Image 1: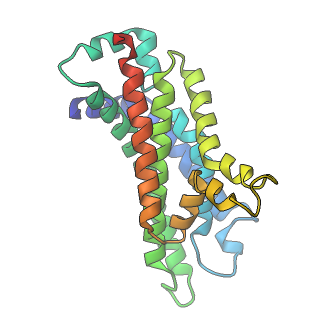
Image 2 (image 1 turned 90 degrees about the vertical axis):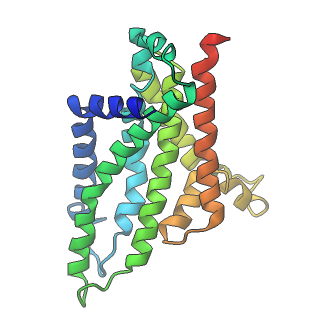
Image 3 (image 1 turned 180 degrees about the vertical axis):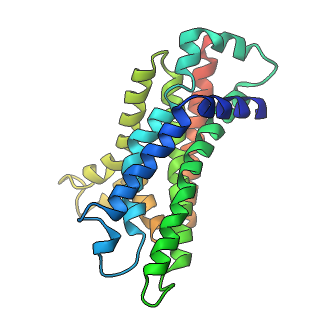
Amino acid sequence: MLAIFFKEINAFFSSLIGYIVIGIFLVLMGLVMWVFPEYSVLDGNYATLDTLFSMAPMVFLFLIPAVTMRSFAEENQTGTIELLVTRPISDWQIVGGKYLASVVLVAIALVPTVLYYLTVYLLGAPVGNLDTGGIVGSYIGLLFLVSAFVAIGVFASSLTNNQITAFLLAAFLCFFVYLSFDFLSRLPIFFGKTDDLVQAFGIQYHYNSMSRGVLDTRDVVYFVSLTAVFIAATVLSLGRRRW
């Protein structure tokens, strides 16, 4: 699995893909955090990183599918997937290596946002008037969100040999799992009855809880289970050529 992992990491950074992903994320979040008047921390009345944790998922809805779209689609298109599956490694190791590489790439994009924390820390009155524990919890929640989106993206890539199709499918699935259950809960058939239960099926419900710095076991179990389901589905998709 480590060989696959390092191969994918080298592929990201030996081309422009890795740098473009990191650059686009940082530019977009920088504009939202410091430039756009409606969201800018500089125009607010208190020092907070809530804007980062509320807007990052919306950026990741499109950015992560762009990262994962080539995972298997490119292998299927070029035919190298046949060489890969004949190696003395299991399908789980292949999927795991590609999955971890994508997660690490997105996590690297989050590292420079620590500068946002330091800036807001210094802007506080008095200096340091910031809920550091809550921010750490929010970062953990964001990493769980990234892990789920990457699992969905890798699964979508395994279904096709066209990278554009993989991107569109992954973006749709991420959008559906993240936002659609919140909309469904507002339908008259659910509203006021089982709306909380319907919302609990969506990522947004659990991410909002974790983004407040609250690490609830139920939220962790949800993200781990969702990620495991899509990784298992990817393994099944990869193995279908043997059926």
